Image 1 (tube, rainbow, N blue to C red):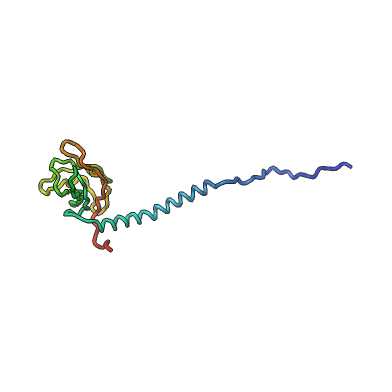
Image 2: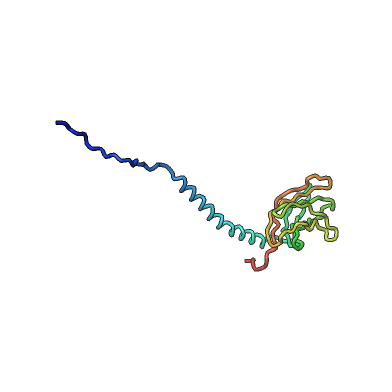
Length: 165
């Protein structure tokens, strides 16, 4: 007897085996979605933190934030204050009038001139919104251009009273 081999089903369609391992597209889409959700949530939280911080900081003569700094071993109080829509800087005790004070932030970079009438450095020529909060770099140099102090501080905007809790 002549035995026939069993019939093998053949098809033109390949039998695909699903790949094993992580689905990188799905993981990437999840990361992007989480980043978007995180930024949507974090922006209001960051703005609330800024408003709370601005409402509770110690303010000076020109409604600005007060910061203790040290120049050549001497303590100073630095105020990042406001003159209408301009930034001004005051120090206590007063720095020499030929001191060079440069501020830079989201509004640009500017060296503030000494204002003899008000005994302040400034106001800035660049407009700076006094209702907004600005992270600024302040650089203080002597008349010869030698660095006396440099640091990042917040020029906290003036917050209306209804923000106090």
